[in-house]
Amino acid sequence: MTPRGRTNQLLYQAELILDVIPGDDEHAEARRMAVEESALALFELALESLLREVTEHARLARHDWRELLLGESVGIAELQRLRELASRPESWLAWLLQRIEALHESSGVARRGRAAAPGLIAVGSSAALSDELRACLQEAKREIAALRETSQEW
Image 1 (tube, rainbow, N blue to C red):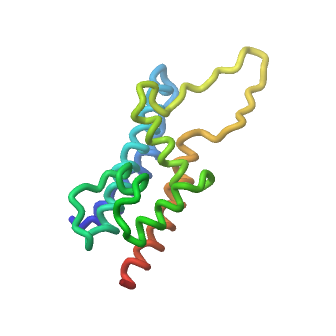
Image 2: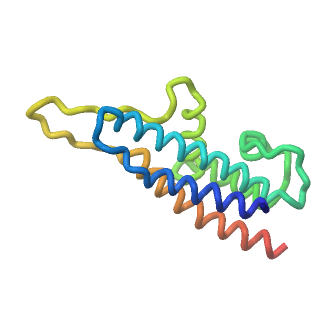
Image 3: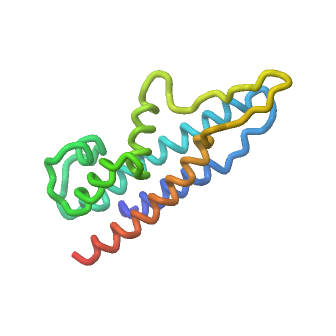
């Protein structure tokens, strides 16, 4: 499989995982958290596959996102574009990198839902992680298409 094919496969699998319905039994909350963290882990793999894809011509030995996106060692236009995107706090890539870091911490990134006290109306001020992941995946796919287009021009 080509790096491009692998990137596409991993993004698709992350989307499929997010479609898993957690159910309504006693394991629903744990299942939802597992779905979210699984999708995020697949998204991290897709990011590394994307980095492999856009740096194919440079024949790099490693494609770790921390080295390529947080360092300045390789001067490839697509990497520079991604570094700039990662440096903007409101970007999908900055959001993703922050969540990936949390995923690797001992507390993880998925959070248990807060049950409202009886008689109170629960009002959520933030989107569910799965919804944020879906939005991030869509933005990533648009950016990846643009990166591929500029990469092919070379």
